[in-house]
Length: 205
Length: 205
Image (tube, rainbow over all chains, first blue to last red; front, side, top):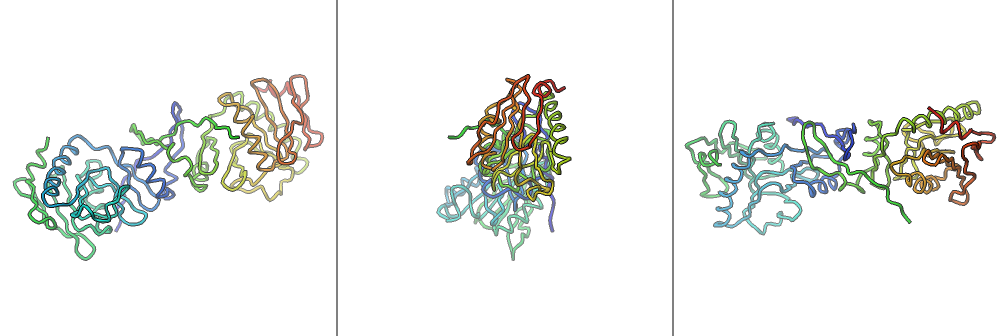
């Protein structure tokens, strides 16, 4: 199954000029080196699959408030239990020729060899805060991507319906470990004892 | 010695968004396939050297008047003799990894195997009309490029000082065959008997 993400048209622009050079003809031809170089030099989130690049929309304030709150919960856990947690933008190699930039990435061991400086080569847990422009990117496409990367746990934090879905990997695909709503405490299967009040997430200011 | 052409800053624009993704960081990394794909779908002149793409400025009305006039002169001469003359944009491979788009390209034999549909692998005569934005491009860089391509004759038509310089290849570099001014008849060494009145070139409307 594939889900086609909406890709905004890309154009090559030249300072001070109106041009009509359509970069979408290059889709499928971008090299990994070009992707890495581009993302080295921008704060925009860009993802890469087999020669295709997708430029993700700028996050909203609400997205960032939720992300910050969530990050601090994971950070507190990592500080007391060990491990390393990072927030976007940080490139994650899903497999050769495929990169994503999850909102949160976590490794349980800070010395895990997959933790590389230019991009991580894997993670134990990732989280995405769903974007309004294209909720399916996080709820469906990423679900396939992170399973492909073999990431044991994937949190989908959805401000649109105020749910937190925790997925755990089983035989190569994700199964729902729990769908948590206001009043619940979302919990991890992987991180023993880690819980977050759903209200705290969606009330983040 | 190298002369660096002024390269306009290039960026990626997304429909309806302001972005700051700077494509200049990819200079040196563009592939020939990407160059060909880009030039296949734009009327902008793009040139390519070892991974670097340069977007040339849009020609002016004056430039195009001169180009059309000269095209008609060359066509009238070479067609009855079995040759072909074309005008930009048509890609010319200087050597593997280097492409230019001369204003006029001529092959004295229409069946020349260097005449290929996607791009020409060489030419017998090329002509450039100097652009005011960067005269050194046509006056200094292009002679080296076209000499590298082994093109026997290169015409430089300069509206800035109203001269026509005809260069002919000798031992790998160009020598002046003649510099022609108003009142003169510019003539070709390669195309025996071909002349154009310089007044007509610069008075073209």
